[in-house]
Length: 481
Image (cartoon, rainbow, N blue to C red; front, side, top):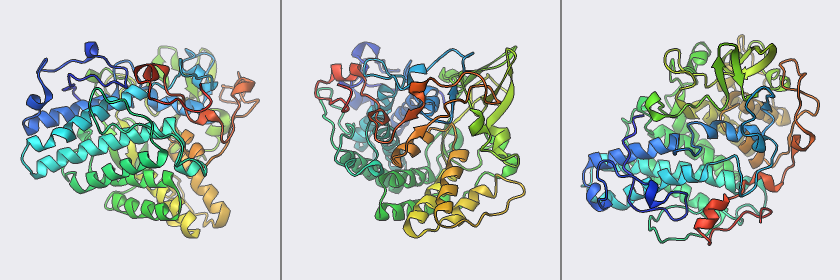
């Protein structure tokens, strides 16, 4: 995605940017009401918003840190002693307001700010299908980044009985530089996300190109299925099915034969929304996981043996996700999802944000909670991962366990595991004796990093102190004061 970024001359008071680090291109020091005149102006602003979702300067957008930051909090990964020890404070749950590994706050609010400026000025161009499409994309971006914010820093509605009334996140639907928002409730934040997505679904165009990293109607529908799943409850589970069914219409699960090449961008089968990453974006998504050197793959984190062994030998994901190989004489289960394209710079690959497989698994879980069903949705994914495939025909608790296992296997290392454990109010538990080598030996996690109990304050990351310093009305999460 080429970065043609129109950044506004108004500082956002509650994020980390200042007037000194905001640049106009090419209308330096021109008021935004003059800049945003033609559809081209608005489309360039959209490109800027998409670009900031990939990487916001040194902060962690989807392009690098977000791909691993949530995963290091889970039992999917173990710190590799021969790595650079990056994100170690996260792996060991030692994050505090003044020092947190999860640097996503400013990364989310920048594209949200751009999207809001688009929406505030959208009437500068005549009503048309093109204008609706611009508005739909802006609302999708704003909803997606706020959803990420609220699931990182706030409780998830299905997590506990008090979640909806607890601190949500400020929703940037006002670009006034003097605005000092307080945190509304989780319920209020989710309502604004849903409101944006429902409007986006009505207005977004039908010709936006996935190859260019643009959102589509199916992407909006897929995100709606995800958000409603997080909201929980019978009515919302029915919405998961409603929107999931629309999202998957005419879009097949990535077939087994194409699945390995999906991860080196050889195809886009089953992808509903991705961020297109080029070398010019100065983002290297795979680096937080590993770097390929003359001596082999040097990983930051690897899959512990217990996770690697969850994948059956007939599961195509084993070849797509892992490389069991040596580095400096030791054998590890390296994660290779983000190693890069077959041609081009290492570790540069498109970021798959929403896939049709997730939507099927959303529907499977929702259907189970409605009436104990969901097997057909589950098998839509399983049938393309195993050869030969024979359905387990599970029922009852065995079916729910199969759905959750398949979710873990399919979406491993894709920013899902931490949030699935969190929304289900489960304890994260690592093996006390399992080390980082592929056979389970090596260096295990330290004792204080073995569990994250259900209900622990650490499931809600601290609001960065730098943001509270900028906005004194911004409340810190309980337990971090």
